[in-house]
Image (cartoon, rainbow, N blue to C red; front, side, top):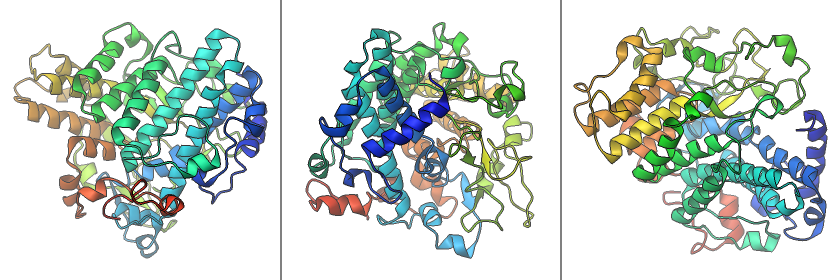
Length: 498
């Protein structure tokens, strides 16, 4: 991988060439050139493909994606985060998402839709022009990486909006404007195809190291495929995909760290000192630990890449829209559960700010920080595997794969809390234990809202914190700009309830 600063220069050129994007523009209103014109002429060799692929990865760092809004559309939306009673926040676009009053004109929905489809567009260009790469190994690798990123984007889209345009090749402006909302089943089929390609070890390595840390791997693709199968309730397929991760030598590649705090530690990794990374200009400023399968890279030393620490979790007095870990979420931790230590309080002018600082170094400023955002980690693989096994066939014996996987995660942080078969006496009780463990393990990791949807418990659980919703609220409104662009309710309708 070339020097990151050099790549960023090329990214600026690519972005202007491909999009001429502005902060307020909508991706599906843009005019990509498709198979001819500037984009077609740009792709001449593997370096051009590499720059374009890096542009797709870079989009994950955007505010409309994993830098800010993905958390807003998942954890803030769920019962894990409460909000401060702040007059400014009550009227804000962020707060309206929290209390389910946001409508299709909310700019956040448009931004997330736009940036996600922009990322898909970049992936489509890589895949469409991949034949310019003459090295057969690199050709497979770059295509597989692009397919992984495209699948991740469509997985978010289908869970947020349901039916949506399924665009798998570069399109002209006219073709884009004629896109209809494809069925959920069709989108999932495309996601599965992409991840099956990316999870093939002949196409992607199991792990990247050094300057290539942070790229998608075949193991990350297999884990994401398992998550997709769970969302589709394809229990046997999920068990097989996740089981292939757990029951092979992949365990040596990825494993639980003994102390969960080290998963999010800001300390140097793999024996390096902090100074080793001071002038780092490679793909990733940090080497991923063995629990991480895929994460979004943020580097505070490169302009524009640092995350805005505590954007939604800052001192109540500092922001109009501020959110804290809900009382219900705090109360579920046992006093000896080490995960509770990650839910530390930051004291501001208000004394009851129980603010989650899982990723940020609170000894630093509340500005930019370079710590990465996990998307897939080994604890998730284990709990997904336990879920799939339990759904396929209930087994609470001491040697049950589901029980062993569940207890691996539980006892890492709560040594006295291992479940016995007698405690999990039926399939429903076992299922509840798995989802409880997921809530304890993954606050602020963009998991809880999707878990509530998958389990069918969103309406009931949100009612416990005073938020009354119905089935129409389980999807977000399609941005109004997309609906009016087509002006065809038969092919591009708004979601019910909006």
